[in-house]
Amino acid sequence: MSDKLNLLSDMNQKLQSLLTLLKTFSHPVAISELSEKLNQSENISDRTIRRYLQQLIKLGLVESQGKNKGVRYFPVIMEENRQVNNLDDNHSSFIFTSENKMIIDQIRQPLIKRELCSYNTDWLDSYQANQTYYLSVEQRKVLHKHGKPLIDELPAGTYARKIFNHLLINLSYNSARLEGNTYSIVDTEKLLLEGKTAANKLDMETIMILNHKEAIRFLVDGINRMEINIDNIRSLHYLLADGLIQPEDAGQIRDMGVRISLSTYIPLEGKARITTQLNRIVSKARQIQEPYEQSFFLLVHLAYLQSFIDVNKRTARLTANIPLVRHNLVPVSFNDITIDDYNSAVISCYELNRIEPLAQLYVWSYQRSCKHYQTRAQSLGIDTLRVKYRQQRRQLIADIVTQQLYNLAQDKYINNFIKNNISKNDHKKFLLDLQHDLNTLDSYNIMGMGITKKELDKWKKINN
Image (cartoon, rainbow, N blue to C red; front, side, top):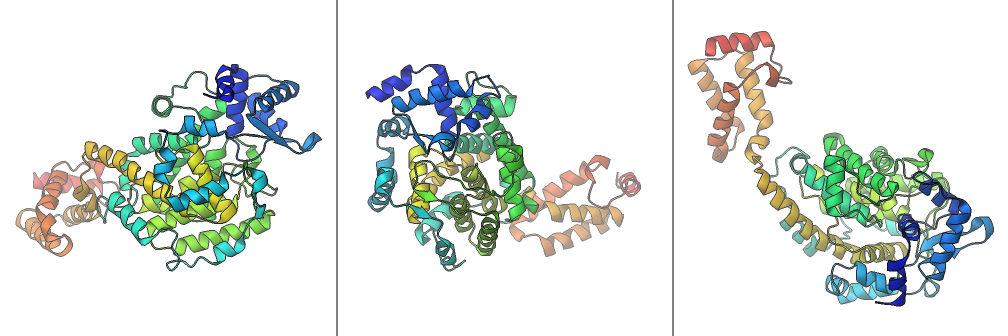
């Protein structure tokens, strides 16, 4: 292990906490921003923070830019850290193809060797929905093979609701992890399901995890009305950013410039221009018919635009799940991707407008996500046919009760209904579910059927 890593492991807790905090920002940070976050949990003067930063700079772990009041700080990604953070020693080399590795190598050159670049409006202009594809035909086939819905006719969001706790833990953990959060998967589960905070964690790390919980719940619970629009994107940002940035910035399109750590990319500036461009992104995304292409398009362009003062990549990752949840596809949780690989692939989009490395990571990670979720879904024993025909079954029950059908008249009505509305192969299962529901029909489960309690009592009295 190098001298730098030895120094990192020997640093006192204060320096480690400050370095961890720095890694959660997507832009170079002023001391005032650090002071605000740190003083939520402990009282540290600006002078002390500045001294800690100078120590981190001497260790080669932090760099600064600007002068006097304009000085900003950002963490340095060391080659040694890349190896330590990887899931295994050869992680990057077997994920990226040789062609994509060449793109990544350009991004991993020192900043001084890379060209400054600004937001490229032509990149979005050149994308024609349902004609242009960021994901290749082969990649889309792989995604559909592994993430296909349990059954096509399931109501939107059924799959995500069934595996909600697993989705909540997995997506919260991985999305936060990619921002430098040090919560383990076990600690994430304890926090989300039991409310137990992990020891020795910064308050803002805990808030980040809890914010993911609220945003994911908003997405899954509201999926039937969850259109791809600016209001919903802003809502997701608000939930993800609440308590992590200034209250007036949560959910608000930014009106000031931002900079990207370890990148030469300068995002678009001006609230009106950003809003216009965001509208164009949303408009194009809504036209895309293929759910995986729609998901990946949102992942790329929402992160690229940087509509908010911070928390842009997290917002893009959750927004990218809207098309998948709506189609009952396995959610994308960004499993097993290293921080360095992910950031390099995203910066390839920023600086080179090359999406190939990120597309390869998306597909590779998605296949691993599918294994996790499908195993979980099988263990829950999801009754797909019962869910599939829920509306038809409830309508038939409503007809039987409101029309006061009994005996032969009831049997004839049921047979005709099944013949005209239910697939032949599903007749037997539908009839079993119907009979169960009729036998257990009571005042508590007739809500939304248009059945009055008086009608139910009369039908039950004669039918029994």
